[in-house]
Image (cartoon, rainbow, N blue to C red; front, side):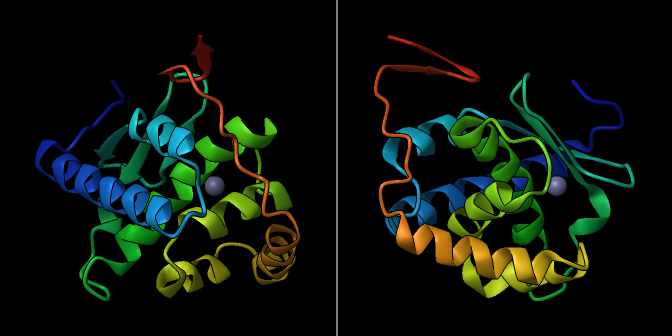
Length: 157
Ligand SMILES: [Zn+2]
């Protein structure tokens, strides 16, 4: 378990994660298998400066300050979607950073109404996101449709 966990807010972050996964699945931008993998990620809210995706242990942390009331839960939704996208990027592409492959996952996972918050993250984010959207459009078969039992990080068939 990470340090400085906020119990009450963790419940809220987990609800938000659930909604993000459900809506991406409904939009068909992630596969049923990927939705199950993301549902297996453990989300913690922490009183720390930054959130982080721990790709090999299957957990993500969300900083307490991101639970601001800015646009309802808009900013929080964006933050959780960003960290979940790191988990998907690892699954789909073995990707760890903020390259175009990360952004291809981000635009698939994050509700479009709150994707704008990513623009402030890196100077080149908007450019990478445009490229990512274009690449996804050209590759409708980008999903990992594996079947079998899901454990985070590996697959048991
Ligand atoms: Zn990141």
